[in-house]
Image (tube, rainbow, N blue to C red):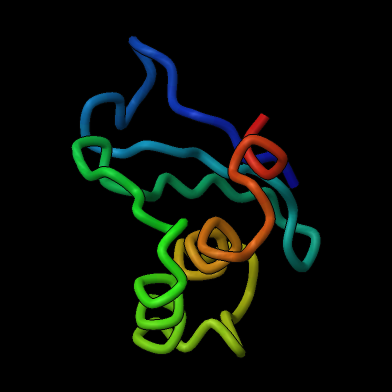
Length: 84
C-alpha cells in the first residue's frame, strides 16, 4: 500500500491531494482523496479529535476506501512519514 501526493499531469491533479494504491482481497485499487485546495490543520488536537470522531476513525473500514486513508492522515503520525 503506497500513499503519495498527486503530481501535475496525473488524473485528479488540482482536485485531490493524495493517491493511494495497493491490493485488497487480491484486487488492485487506486483511491484519490483529500481536497487539493484545503489546508490540513491536523496539528490542533481539538480539530484532530473532531475530524476522527466525525469520520468514525476508530473503525475506518477497508483500505480501498478514501475514509481509511483520510483517517490515517489525521493520526498522530507525521504526514511526511505516511505520504512518500
